View 1 (cartoon, helix red, strand yellow):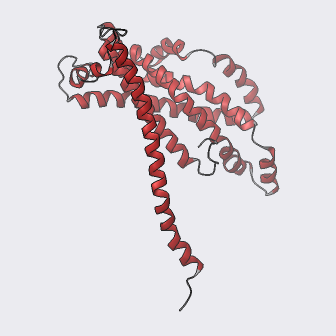
View 2: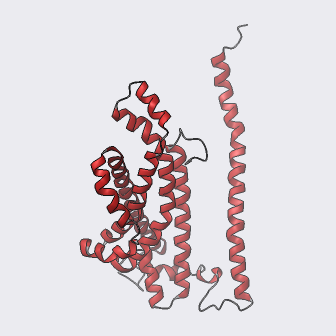
View 3: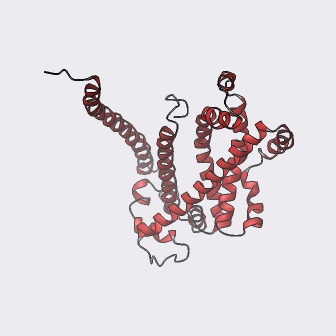
Length: 295
């Protein structure tokens, strides 16, 4: 009888290892989901308790069981062109509004990330570009994106342009300075080894520098995701005329507290889902980075 080869043993043990790891993964996800439910449930229970004892008046602070139970009634306000008519299905009206806001956030983040990465590379590669751009970037970085709203409306009018531009502004300056800092902090050992092996400038950039800085940059971008949500809601309230920010303004103008908290719940849930998806994307893109360093 011929003994099994090493390759056969490896191929046979791989499925077994995967099967053994599956319950562990499911357990970790179940525990994580349980803690999430416990956290959100505790907050909702405290809110409901405050309402029950009279500390949270229904007119101003309606508890979750009030602003979540009439989904259809709330959804009719999510179509700015047919308010009160509810021509579309409630789920379609709410879903299309949420997706419009998410698209603006993602567009602004993507443009800001690419532009900041390109600027950071130019700043660290060319001395004259560094000396001409860094003072200007440092001067503009402290300006709040909200202050750029009139400029955005002047440049792009009413529509998606102002919202995407404001998200871009909110990301670009911070990410550019972070890119410069990350590139300058790349270990000299990596660069020396690359030069010793005969790497060209292009190879050092794409095979040494970028892999070293991307974990930190994506970590910074994830932190800016929440800031982007705050900015886009302000832009939608003034310069777009649609989206979740517009619904918040409508609820304020009509003194509809239930709609306010319903929209806030949607914003929080959507932001949480985006954060989870972003973390999963990081794990797959940064396959070379150790766990905990940008993954």
